[in-house]
Structure formats: C-alpha cells, structure tokens
Length: 98
Ligand code: FES
Image (tube, rainbow, N blue to C red; front, top):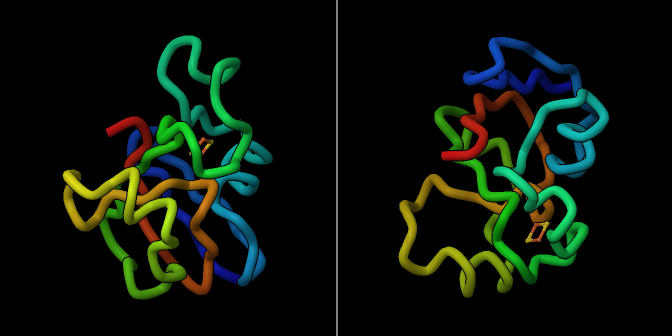
C-alpha cells in the first residue's frame, strides 16, 4: 500500500501499488481539473494535458513518463506529470492543478 499526500487538499489517500494516479484521485474526490476541464478532458487517454499535477516528493515512486507525457509536458518542469499516465509504485506527495 502506498500513501499519496495531496498537498493542496491536505489529505492522505492509501493506494494499491500499480494503480493509476488519476483513478485514485477521482476515487478520493480530489479535483484534478481546472474549471470545465473535468467535462472537456480526454478521460485519461493522455491527449489533453489537463490532468497535470506537480510531484512534490516521491518522484522515484511513480512510473516513468510515458511518450504522451514526454510530448505534452516537454516544456514543463520535470516534476510535472499527467495523472492519467502515472502509476503509483510507492509514497508520493502531489500538488494538484499546478
Ligand atoms: S485526462 Fe487528458 S491527458 Fe490526462
């Protein structure tokens, strides 16, 4: 079991290792999206970039960036991830809506 700390929300969520960060976040009712992007997003296909999060700590406990992330986040900080493309392998601290 991994602990995901959502810094903005001030909560910790336990997640099974190997689970998807977007799915864990939605299951915990953590808002990943700004404004109407919740309704306009690509629903986790890695095509819209709206589920971006900043990994404050535990970057090594997450899966490597996927090709979709390398494309969408090429000009963003290295700590930025697309939640829908990120698998949880251990504890991490996340800043939503950076
Ligand atoms: S939901 Fe569209 S890139 Fe993650």
